[in-house]
Length: 219
Image: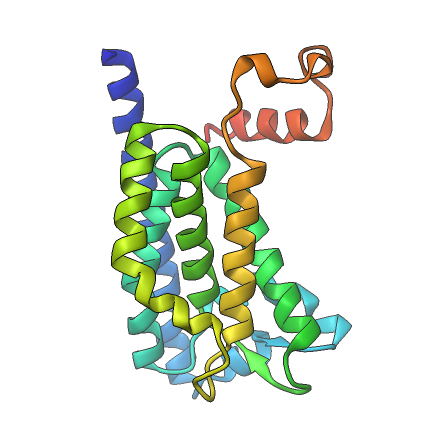
């Protein structure tokens, strides 16, 4: 029991420093972006239907269009990101990747032509879905309590996945939420009895190789 608490504390500390680091990067970029009259958002935001712009799905969460925009995203991103990461950085990184790709692809495929989308709100919705569904799927008391609390506190923002507010990327919100839910399913804890027998004899599978690389990085 003591070992479990020690591991939880270590993971929580790592999650805290990770989210503080992400916030520092986002706010530093915002200062440069503001000085440049938000040219970074226009250049590195995601434009729909342009193949050359697909890599921008990885840069758009770090960019915003105003101080009110970044302020609205920063607090929920910090809280929900921490709650997504405190159970371990490996799953957090993989979940973040799924959310990024899901939200980015939905925006790229369905957003109006020549529209530039930027902001971390898609990640906020993704982490929301991930934390809530993880609490249901993993059968962990702590995760279930955290998921329930998050569902109660943040349920009102779900209206953001509907096309009700002009100028707000509801597609990014919806895509992020779908990605978070998918990540919770893909990364759920599975009882040992349900593990496919071949997994034990296939250490070189793509998933195993990725987790091994994350281990080597100390994550």
